[in-house]
Length: 155
Length: 155
Image 1 (cartoon, chains in turn brown, purple):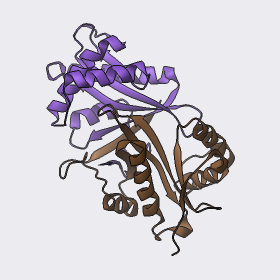
Image 2 (spheres, one colour):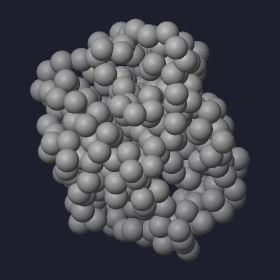
Image 3 (cartoon, chains in turn brown, green):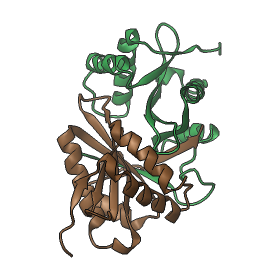
Image 4 (tube, chains in turn brown, orange):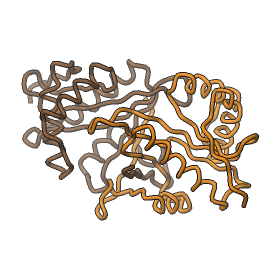
């Protein structure tokens, strides 16, 4: 595989990001307002500095990592939340997800984050293996003990 | 039990919040920089609008809920993350956690949030029962299916 280019997205990439996130939602049977609406929202969030997006590939990106940053409760640093990590079906098993995640870790460190969090489905064995290979732990950062569950509700 | 007062904290409550969060960390064997340092950090974050804190009790608060808000990726609304929920040991099993969580849900709705997330330990049966009673779900919001795991790593 030729080396893949991972780069930080700008507002001009909103359309490509909208397509990827729309495809992501569709593949996992999550509701989606359509690629155009996602793109419009992403453009606003990128311009406001509310999200940071890494793209794999120069023209037609084949994957993305979407990050949020917030000031940690403690210490005086940032926490990073990896909200989305997606690789298009035709480009999986080629190391793209790992390259995106490694680039996300590197970017988060540069920004001053000391911790990264993410949620993933218990049955997504491939994703969990990737996260664990890159140092993530679902036991609250401890070597042993109970797992951390992610709960949510609509309001 | 007399009705408990739940109120939104101001910067002047930072010392009380620092004590509660320090006690929380200590009880769960998490590292803590001490109540004074936590208070100092919380004051800054409250003043910057980075955190919202609800306190149970007027003078000597006996519990707290600490919330973060961020613009949702989709729809045009806010997501809320319940980062901390704590009740001092002597006041547990009296409905304080539930009252704090209900107040947090109400506040998040008023602010325009459409979703609330939180993480909890698989073995914290009491907390999980409370979250589930108040409508939270650890299956990505679906009635059935795999659970959502929370992963993290230091950077």
